[in-house]
Image (cartoon, rainbow, N blue to C red; front, side, top):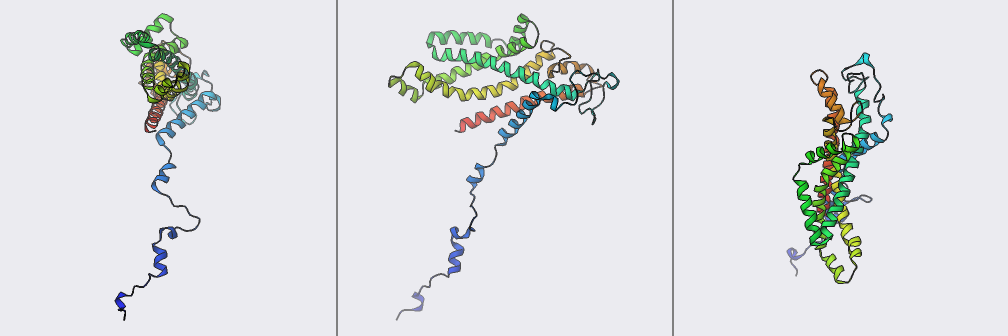
Length: 305
């Protein structure tokens, strides 16, 4: 006879259904794992500064849609009005609306920053590519030139260029671009040299590919991605330096609604009309911080890939 202890009953159907993970999920629902949830989470260090920069670009492109007054509209009867619902950022010594001037100044400040970055990055790409691809003699010459330029502080180099060209918006743009070019050139040279020593470039050379084929298909595409990060970081730096030169009276001159020149005028009335310097300064900090955070976030994203 078989003992009752040796008899093993099958588990109940209800417990089987309850213990099955596939059957616990209701029909029509999707199971979410931690990895899938992270995939749909927005990258805030990229999204937030990108939204800020997009708003600044829209403001620069269509300032009349945002500003309630013209940048040069004067109203002496309401000079030095404190910030209020009628004048969000107050008014200046001539009764001009500070908010409208800051909005219209977005175009000139961003334009100077973009053009100066384009000048510096373009010259940096030229010098860096020559140093990385031109051989030992060319590399030696370009490297010594960069060392001479690095001997001058960037702002001092910009002041030297403005001394030669004269003050003005165009001179400020060129001066800031030339002062940032040595840093770009050194970074691009190191990137080109790193790509040249990579395995896929050596394989292309062994396979008999032409020099132009290797440069256009392998070196330049792999250098292009870091260039975008450098440009993003450089825009904020160029805006700060251009505003600094305008603050010193070497860039845009009053009554042009440029952030640096507004700071220069507002410092005379800082004790009694703080809003003349606070709000233009906030926009300078906001634009510089947004581009810097976005650039570092993109740089981190490239390293993670």
